[in-house]
Length: 202
Image 1 (cartoon, helix red, strand yellow):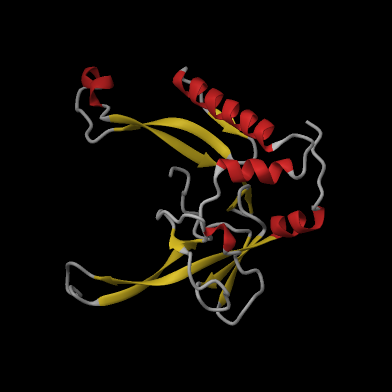
Image 2: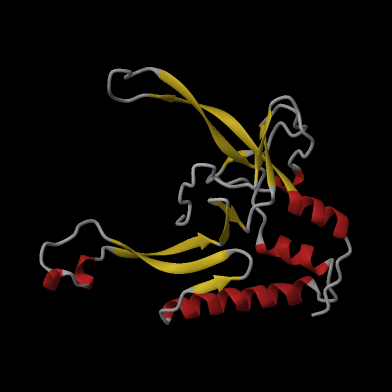
């Protein structure tokens, strides 16, 4: 497939810096000495869900392949990823990370002879993002060198369409994430967790 980069400058820029919106969330402490007290945290906001069809259209604009051709390749790729997981292999997703199968186990046993497949409650697919270590910090390949955190609704022209991550948002692609720094933005270098928290399994 002869893919031609038509938009090299914007793609390079996106590979260097990225913006991620967040919103303030109020929570009530349920127990303890501070029970009933309201505290605040922040939650990431998604601008929508990019479907496989939309990704295929984006790729086709830079290739000689049609959207249908790209979709066919992506479908086959997904098929063989699942097939090889079934066969017991871990699967590396180039530039993303590794897919594995996790055991969900609610209890352990005292006798090694009792440690059999019967203690496995269920199986769960697990994704571990690829990363490199730099000065003791994980640098994830999925994230750009810098991430700008932008408070949702401030310095953002899209007042509607954003949703907390994990929520469904149909047709949110019209809302373009902001890219220009403002007064209420935080820049995170390297796009990694500074505390080294393991975000491997999601």
